[in-house]
Length: 195
Image 1 (cartoon, helix red, strand yellow):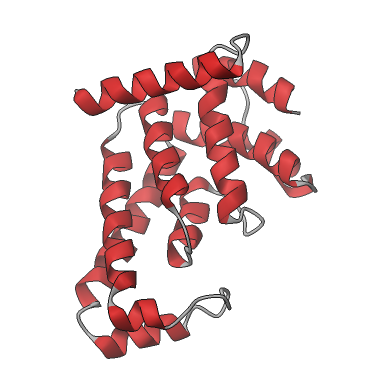
Image 2 (image 1 turned 135 degrees about the vertical axis):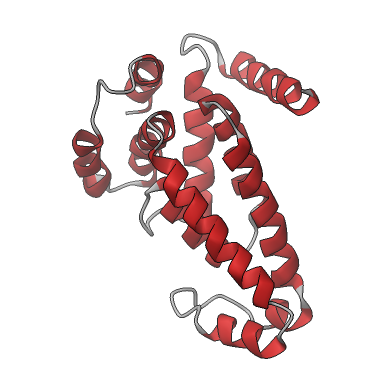
């Protein structure tokens, strides 16, 4: 699956209308292993970024985060917010009481704004890669990333990290070896940050 995705991602980038999302969604639903989730998910996110479908969801997520941050001065609001995290039983209350959740979500908000400002697929994936690699104990952040990228709850932070990284690596020449791919991605990232 990885080999197929590596070969077809450059084609999808050059001809974004060639493969519709309706063809990919059944493959996402049928993916039974983390490797398959990563492979099909990588292709899926390349397509939704390329065809602009991620943009609306990203803007909605920014509104949600901005609203949360505007209300976060209230301890009662933060504790209430923590209680609503029922789909994340591992969520701890102390980051919400002590302010770590505010810092995490503020950083995440700024990172999503950088993704929103990106003008191309590669720069978007580089920013997304930086976001997912920094996630430690995401709850709302993971939910929002899953929503933005159109992925379901099978995409844990670890699987999402591998998926975004694979999508990014797939944009580099497929015949390049792994070391060369990484160095080219880092060079491009450095050029984008200095621009």
